[in-house]
Length: 241
Image 1: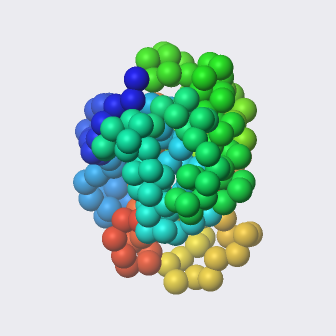
Image 2 (image 1 turned 45 degrees about the vertical axis):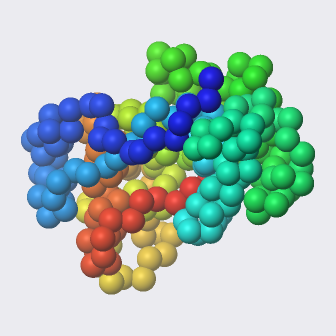
């Protein structure tokens, strides 16, 4: 059943307990947490996996404002079918003409990905929201990466920013790798970053053993390390696998 589009909210987990655990377990991370300040991550409330992945596909390889415009145009194009401010269903998206999606600004590859997402939602490959809430992180990754255009990174972002999962470490994410190198490695603010400067996933996973079960919170602070190094406000990760 389609639902009205809703506003972001705080995660469901106890972020104060997470910060206390991380600070006690890792002194270097504790210093970053102190410098970065309060944990202000927000997640999209009541989004189904289908809705979240529609947005993820549209945002891939685009700047935020351009992607937001295309996303809004596409949603608005379904207003007569779904109702104003209500996300279209998988059936609505699968049945709509290509011209409707093209008019919103979607590329051929993204149209194909959205149609595959809709088909796999209808056949049950993509779980419903009640189903996905009972699944492990790895089971969710296994299911959703069967959708055209959806890789592990996209699902990890969904786990953190949509499903409010507390223990996700996206080791392929550029910002997390850079933040790790700034916090635990030899990378300094202002250095020109080369691939050799970025932390290796195995090193990140080794250190993260002390962070469980709060790797999502640690990852958020590693993104903040990049922003602190650049002297700017928090910039959330992009949407590209």
